[in-house]
Structures are given as C-alpha cells and as structure tokens.
Length: 303
Image (cartoon, rainbow, N blue to C red; front, side, top):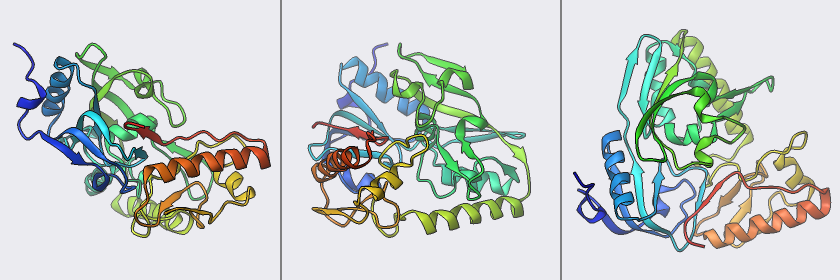
C-alpha cells in the first residue's frame, strides 16, 4: 500500500504562519501544515512527506527555536499526540504531550521525577532532543530527563518503528542522537519513583520561585529560552554581562536585564533582528572575554 501524499492528508493546510505557535512569537509561514493528534497520525504524516520527497519539520511547543522570517519549506507537523498510559511507577507518553501536563498527571498519582522540570515549556519530543535539564535551586546538582527515561518508540532513519532503550539516545548536555540522525520519537516510557503530592508540590514551588526570580517569564516577554550553550566554568549569561551587553536593545529584541542569556521579544521582533543580535553578542563577547559563544537554540527554516 502506497503512503498517502501530503495533499491528501486529512486537515493539511497551506501557507500557515508559524509565529503564533512559537514561544518567541516569531516566524514566517509553513508551505504545508498539519496538526496531528496521535503517534499514528504523526507516522502517517512523515510517511507522506517521505513519499513525496518533501522536507518535514516536527513542531512541539515551539520553544527553544528561532523560525526564520521566510518560514519553513516543506511540511510542518504540529505534534499534539498526547496519549498517556501508566503501568505502576512507569508512565508512557506520546511525544506531543507537554511536560507540564505530565507533571500534573504524575503528581496526582504521587509519582516523582518530572516535577524537576516545572516551568519549562517543552513537549516530550523536545525534552528528549535537548536532554531537558534543570540546575536545582540549591545549585547542588543538575537534573536531566535522561535520568528517568527507560525506553522509547522511535521512527528510525529507515522510517521503521523501533523500540529502543535509554542508551540509544546518546544523551549529552543539550544533545542527543536526535540532533545527528533523522530519528523521530513517537512515545517515551519514564521510570518514576513513589513520593507524596506534598513533597512534589514543594519541589515545584521551589523550582518555579527560582525561575521567576532569575529568568524572564513568557508571561512577561516572548522568548525562545536560553540562547547560547554554557561554557564550562563560565556561564553564557555571565559572559554577556561582563561584555557590557545586559539590557542591550537591537531593534525589537533586548538582552534581558534579568538574565543575559535570554533575548526577549519586546514586540514585533523579527528573526533577522534576533540573528543579527546573536552575531553582535558573539563578536563582542569574543573581543572582551576571549570566549566563543555557540547557540544552543535551534535555528530553523529558510535563511
């Protein structure tokens, strides 16, 4: 049976503006756009794109990316697949489920592990791609999503479903196999531990309080999250501050006065402005500190 072509996918649309679907509120249109509600629909959309030899991009919560003003060529698949199943202390969630929704579900079942990522706008797929992490408020340790991943179902590079274990993802800091191979996560099984709602709520409160104090919130300004990779022994935000750029404004984008590794959209910012500011920061930090900053944020679309 031949895979359906993109034009025949139920619900597919043309020339859909992507800015409203990103936390940065920046980005041009997708040539083709389809929202999927299940892992099966996600797989069918990818099969169609491959059959038509059309590039595709899977969009989750729209965080941690900068979409170009010209948009994305090919098919953008908005992954809203969010089915969840519990087996004892294990949770299997489809890759479009948000971490926020899973925190609520697991808290109500007195299961701990995901609450460490409270306040991070990420889908399961995005969390796996970036090895989602959070340095705890006490600054004594970093929690990684990798630490609770037991297994996953993926579409491998051959377009075949495959069940894999945690080691398959080759997790690193802001890194995984998903950066290096065209592998798509369909669902993930998390190994959680028993706790109490009170203890989980306390951790959530501590994490959110720290975030609110230290980082600009999306309720204040649109942003893509932290922009540059950390440099061992020298935080990117501290280097940008040392270079005298904290609070610097370029066009409609500002280096956040709250945390210099966040470039916030003051309203009406373009991707071009963001990229020009990124280059200015890199040049200035290199000249004044000797360190070369590299973006951790995904830069996608036609440039």
